[in-house]
Length: 49
Image (tube, rainbow, N blue to C red; front, side, top):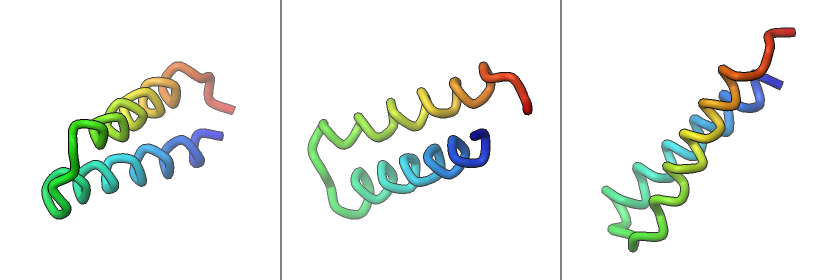
């Protein structure tokens, strides 16, 4: 589960970076950053298996 959250966090951050700096996306692209932070926090709050 932790590996999946790490991959999701990485995908969301890369998507946010591309959306903001490469494609000049609108304000809604920041939702990806919020999702990445949420996945990152959930990753640390879950107990290691």
